[in-house]
Image (cartoon, rainbow, N blue to C red; front, side, top):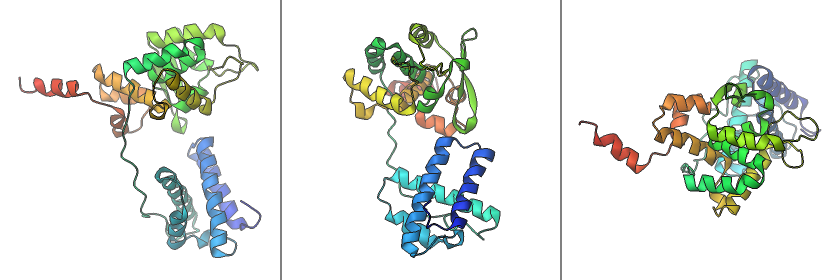
Length: 293
């Protein structure tokens, strides 16, 4: 917050973010996003009100006016509303507000989800391009063969691997962890990569590039786009998340039950897992062909 924003609002924001970090287990990235959302709201509200902002100034009219002023996309707007709603809920719990003025504000519609799993040819084509840099091959297999998220791939360490048991411990959202068995293709990619792993500063991060630098989230994204383009695939339709969907879809097509897929993906809600899956026409025909046989 800048110096003109009232201390009461700034202090309340700081206290809320500390609460989220220490008691709710929110990640530093989520905390940073909320901080930016509220800083921008505070700056806008000061200009709108033409005076310093206090928590008690936040009402439904102010919140709606702010959301309507935003020019970002639907996903970003929904996150802003979530930030304001969570902050105001905290103020209610703390006794600074009688009720949450942001609760019930209509949210912009999201575009219809169109999950795209990679075909086997697309996946293997990208893996073929990645053979020149073994860390890139392992990156693809950790997502497509073990179902890791982009942030999980970037943060996994050598200490998370149990090669004897062929298990990888993955620390996901909300500081939750899950254990993912490593299949033969992932282990093969790991074996091809490890002799080339030379961290510059002794980092325990698993994925280290050819310069000895650990791979971060942005590098994961950029690498996937680059590999897709080199493999002759439209990079606009390929993302790190596409590999996670591919992992889930292939498990489903080989008959893995939904509960097991949920555990492997680390989803809290089974309905989230279901949205990841792409069911082929052949699966549907097979499902009904013997229904009453």
